[in-house]
Image 1 (spheres, rainbow, N blue to C red):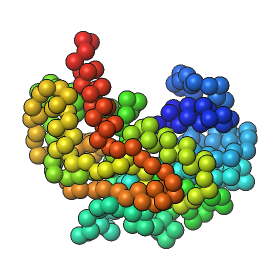
Image 2 (image 1 turned 90 degrees about the vertical axis):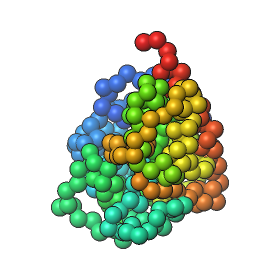
Image 3 (image 1 turned 30 degrees about the vertical axis):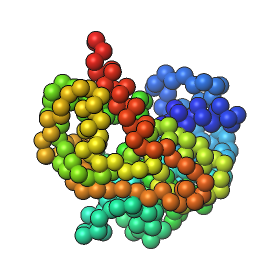
Image 4 (image 1 turned 90 degrees about the horizontal axis):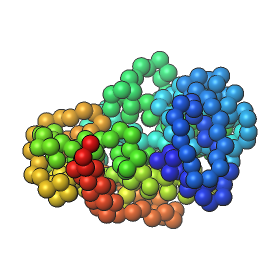
Length: 294
């Protein structure tokens, strides 16, 4: 969604600066300023962001309390607002969710202002649980310690043609190739968002003064069995489903339904696209690519 966000903002006439390590050649539709820095190095981060004052900063790679502390130090006194790309994973806290199904989950289900910050705690972001805890701590540090307005956008799984993880493509190609697809609970319903909707919501935040957490997902939860059905229709193959877990970040990993409420964003004036429309189109594109000769 990052490249889409840059294009949307630049097309609207904003002066956009992209801060990256500079390792990938990326072209944008408009002239966009670039600065090179290492997000994981505090000195590099501070030196890069010292090059200007920023009306709004979007941070897509803040994964921990340390990352949050570093950005607070780097942009203190230099930004009007800060937008953390957070995750719906913040709601999946085993210590708090026992016996509480996460259906139509609203933002108040996780409150970062009173979440304990234990910087001695170790969490491995390579696991889903570690990733979730990292995002909870990042939100908590920013909300409790930043001296500037903070927005935390809680995204579910983001899918689209520019998804670097290729997790939808993996499942489409499994079914197209008559490989078994691991689906723990086909009846489970989940929320999703397209990369274009995600970029559109982030861009919209530049036009309003809202702060705090926002759920951002496309309109309408969808059952895993329906996603499988869409893939079957697109590929012309019957899926071989095995009821067992896949990797931690699979689109089919849900053991139970986990859906988000976007009532807060809708009340604030943002309308999301229907999930079924873009998802079906996205699956058709992946199916066509799977059938194309190598």
